Image (cartoon, rainbow, N blue to C red):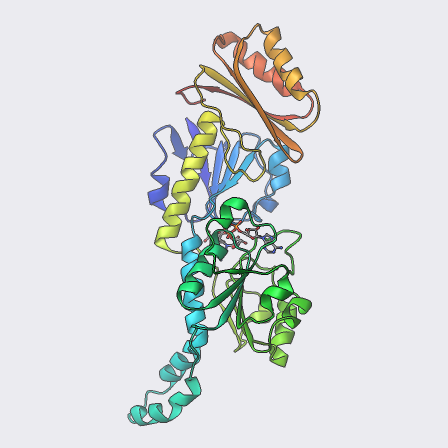
Length: 392
Ligand SMILES: NC(=O)c1ccc[n+]([C@@H]2O[C@H](COP(=O)([O-])OP(=O)(O)OC[C@H]3O[C@@H](n4cnc5c(N)ncnc54)[C@H](O)[C@@H]3O)[C@@H](O)[C@H]2O)c1
Ligand SMILES: O=C(O)CC[C@@H](O)C(=O)O
């Protein structure tokens, strides 16, 4: 039986994906965490923990280095909530262009009997603009950014994208009418609206800073539905005061943004739709099951891709540092136990490497000793032994 610990509200329809070999929240020695936004940086990860899956895109709430040192694989569920964010951004663009917040606030405040006459007089103050023909800069063209860019094109907007690290796969998702900018200032210099869809990391911290804001036309409207810290909120407050930025929309509140008429804060609801939550939880459950039962890895945050059909009776998986002589030390241990390897694969990603070794004739009494022997090799952080068609 595998033990899964969940954090946050995880869609029950997604949790139903787990087979009868999985129990939820019943053990102090979990094999897997299935999480959303819980901050794990303050937690010591248990030694039993083999995998953490974030139902969602961002992994900045996970201590990746600690997980890697613990031999814990980390995954997210790429794209599972991208459509939800796209629809919210399109909604906000329409809200922004038609002054919907001010207009509905006006209506809520004026309920007098002769309101229809006042309305016809007052409505001119809520005149809007149309999105067709306006320019949207999309910073980051991954799962969310590509959908936003394509949807904005379908509204007749000019779309300029900036993503110096765009993967070849992601590029396929972007309509050819999206213009590519070579630099951030180039992307934003003609924008009526700027929307940011990049991961939070050391390179993107304050990506939208004083200089980036100065490169935007006066009166630009800015959207941050990525993460707190990617936009320098102090610089934005200064730019709002001078009129450089007309309005700031963000999913991430903090005190300096509170009660500002030109700031609209939503409470981190970008991915909060029924559909996105089911997608994320379902994808996360499948990822946990695949990793725990086969050891195969696709698109992990901290491990290389390694996908080997599991045809032998047993499989050793070993997470180790990406240093010389590891595979030879591992195979020497198996040779010493007189084991014949049927398949072997190894891959590396930055400082970490991952080895899968399949064997057929492994006797039960040998198993614990071999795991212990392999675990003793310096630079090995996790050894697992999987039996095909069975749980550990
Ligand atoms: N508000 C929410 O609820 C919500 C929901 C989903 C995603 N997100 C956040 O939105 C962001 C985007 O998510 P995603 O799923 O599209 O991620 P993604 O990984 O699919 O795409 C991110 C893109 O940003 C690009 N990028 C990285 N650094 C860049 C830089 N310095 N300049 C320009 N581009 C850069 C990458 O090349 C990649 O194409 C993430 O921060 C994620 O956490 C928030
Ligand atoms: O609602 C959530 O779990 C947050 C989703 C979002 O921030 C993400 O990173 O995917």
